[in-house]
Length: 220
Image (spheres, rainbow, N blue to C red):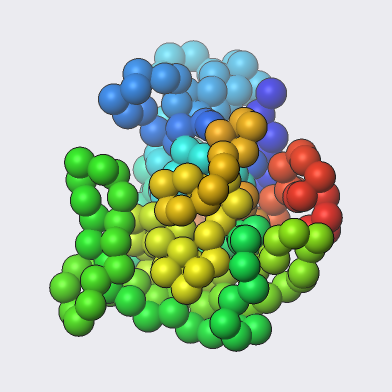
């Protein structure tokens, strides 16, 4: 069942479950976009192909808001907003250690290793510039909840930049977690998306509910 967070004639936002892939890849698994097309086709009794444009992506083990465009006009206008950094993305990350400060801006250069599908922080200016703001929201029993606002959109940016300051996301084996989560998820949620509607020109805020599980429940 799709968890639809927002829907009109121009856009549709889904609360992605961990494990869903946003767009088709080499695994050959059915992407979330196909399920959304089927949902639209059935709901609106649409004949023929359904247009659905992928505006942005989330890593497979990450959960939360994925926004798709239902028209080519909405797609090009939203792509422009993302390109011009006019979209405010907010994530929640559950990490193993308290961060060095209660809030901070992280500024690094990242390099992607294609073979490993992993990014690394590089010294100097080798790689792509990556900036994010974090804030400590809550101390949980064994973990810490951070609010993260990325200013750039680099490969695995939040995961690698937080791990670099000793704040490894729960379940994220790739970036140093001691153990995986049972469902292979990581505790990273695309929690909020704020932007100007591409056609109506009104401010839109979409908020995702947290996934199931006791740790996420404690974050509320």
